[in-house]
Image (cartoon, rainbow, N blue to C red; front, side):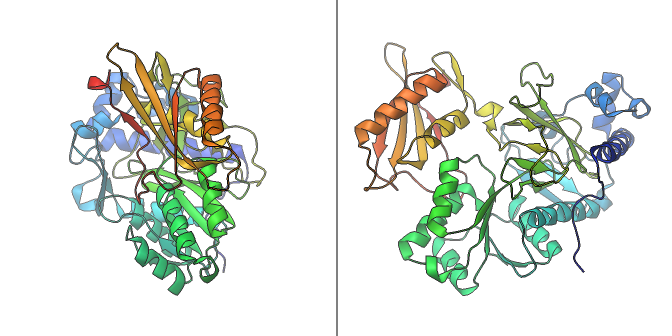
Length: 432
């Protein structure tokens, strides 16, 4: 029997009714069982009985990473310790990790959501899923594995091992799906090319996330490996982990699991909603999470809602691919710049590879300098380095309204990593 992991709702109205029920449960649960939330809700003058519509969400106070750190090591705990079966953690900005607790139901819900990702990506039980992300305190590896087992495909839990082991498993196991960060996916694609393995492997799909990536990186991975489709997956430790949304086969944004959490897109400064289609910060409210529920949690991730119906026909709403983080922004010559803007410009220019670095310097006269290092895509590229420099500097100036210096380096000269790639290096004194 084929089990569907999609929600049992047939309209946006039914989905909204399900969301309201979940919101009312979350606020009541948090108010009754969490000292932290009870205090914040009382300070905001809100009681659970006052949540009568989804519009009442805006009356609720925000939760931030600082709240998690202030209540370390069991922040937002809303169940007895004997009901907690696991913790996961991600790195924090002040040295303390952000630790989140899970009940068995939380784990089961997470596995179900992740299985939905595999279903949306078109996997079957015949697929063999090679998992190349970290295991341990981080949510990634175990999330990919639990979802795979819930879905019923074969999991190959290699983790972030070296490329030699991954290549061996790709050949020996005939893996059909590869799950990794975008940087690791590129690294493995280049290893496959260098070792001449394309005809000996069976890769059909990549599922990757954990970091912003460019269209150029996606096309490069697909071109090298011959994989038919690549899917962007979303998630964060505070909200279960990876698996809370996936790009569908139409490849026009990411469907998010709106039956498990509410998503607001707000202006990072005013914290007011932005119009559909405009970029803002993702703010999430969980609807079923028991151990560490989230009420209007500021993720700092930037994206925009895609309000039009998806060509795939799925009624679950969509947001765009993540464009960066509000705290990734850097200021250069009085202009606020997000790395995603540079991604966008470079993706439009032929003969430029997917890897790049931005270096910020300050001259003795106090003037800032931005140097962008890019890779030449290949020796057979018809454009000379001089032409590439002119194109990039012109488009950076036209689209981002700043002047930058550009250095073209050989393909493969910039570092690859199995983790998230560092793109911006600010060498200015004290970050000024």
